[in-house]
Image 1 (cartoon, helix red, strand yellow):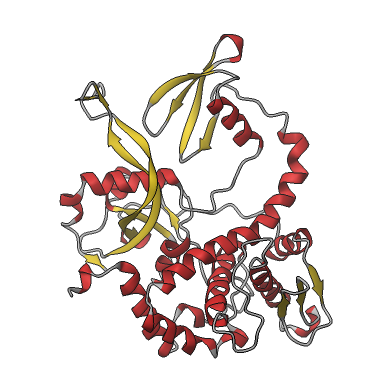
Image 2: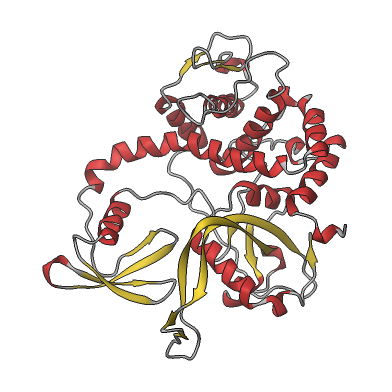
Length: 396
């Protein structure tokens, strides 16, 4: 079978198996001396949203110093075109929506500029979407950006997650482990770690295991020594630790899990798709753990947030798009614009979308996953720019 015609999950899984056997995988990337993360979360250079799951992991495997990525058409639209001869990286993700040309009475609806009017359609079943992305270093005219630092330090954020997890921590242990039977995390004292950042990285890794409890994400029990599930569980929690490392700027340390890399290599040799399965599960784990921080923040801001109301000029991200509040009308109604489709609609206080926008305004949800609007952009681009994209070199 032609290599390029094989499923992406098979290609990446087999590549990772070889890297694991050679001790050259992402899991063995050296830690930085200053106690910060050796990884940078890949983001979309246009909308600044993070990639997630298997897509994020594939991009992290590229070991590029610039974390920004764009598809060919996004780069063109962004006026940062792809450099001649640049190689794209193929990713894939699931989407519950797709863009289709809007029709009325069987006829296509056109915009004033003559271009087709597109509409977002929710699918009954999610579909797998693929896209070639180009790194920021391979884009012309892309300015150096700055990321606004979090108000709290990585250690403060980790402390918040630990304290808000409601999981008991026992710091008198000789080893670091999660006991599912008692829902307790056992760890040595902080002073026994080489540096405090490693203590908190280990604590968050244990929290990743704790998400497997039946009251949380309910993964298979792996407490039994020699359990066949143990390497699968550790593959997921180690990928989750890498993802959390990119978001909190804490170091990732393979540490005592190093002997498992050969087990992971064997698993991926036999079933390459397990890497993508593990990466997507790892995203759920990382989101759950980081959610402990978000819950604490939401509790703190509840009173202040409840006073927020819709107002002209606001732009509110919701359900994969951004709505702009254009004009307040009588009886509390508003005229708004879907900035993805340019559709203008009227919403009233009894309207479901009105209530959803108010709720999103009062309880903003950070975009931990690849944004649906970004997914739709990529779907539209792939459907309408195949000729342009194939003119560039692509790397699988």
